[in-house]
Image 1 (cartoon, helix red, strand yellow):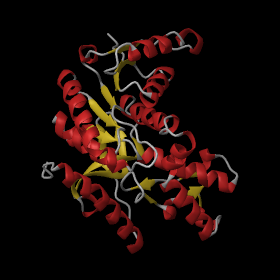
Image 2: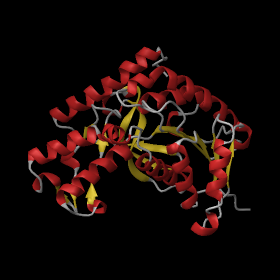
Image 3: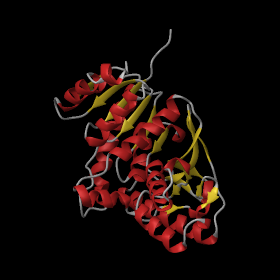
Length: 313
């Protein structure tokens, strides 16, 4: 008998709720929205579910404060944690969010031992590591979301500068999800044409800078963290896993020798499918790109050391 996928989204704030609604709209599976706030996940889930007849989806959406309802989920999406506020760096969130993520993942993983985990909570690279430790899952079944989002921002800004559809922009961002992220200009194209042939170095430099501070730009405008683009990025990853699409996506993946790095989660292009991160793809770097990537990796290792995690994994 055909079994519908089951998706757990932990955290019913703006990002978690928007993600849950997008997943329902895409009919990827039945949704369980979990939060510690009594009534909030239940109310938001009911509201979403009632949009089904209008939006023509048949997936069930339920909200709960009890992890029992998440049992046997196929994929767990973690958005729970303290959101970044204006003036805060992602690392400012480190200790409290590591405790939150570690706690919720341990509870959810116990009830869904065969699931995949996708982490959004910031600082996302570190929280992916925390989630893997808390779950005890193989590394390929735990990944973080940042590269899809950062790359979407990069593609949006490039499309705006070129006055073309973002659908025709191919570009990706590597490294940590922070100010040291590495937008790879040399691998960026518009309709197959290298970006460097279409924009000046000055224009490209401005776009790279804007990409690195994209989250902060939204934060400064609305005094709250972004959630539409992050939710869309999560839905893209969930879809790739549940439909076994084998998409090449820039995701926070565990490195075990790739790019000369070990025992760390960081953003790299990878094949994402039904088994999670199925393969990390290595691209050739120039010396400058290599230096930028190593600097970005170092910015991820520092907070890991602060948490005093067992880096030998």
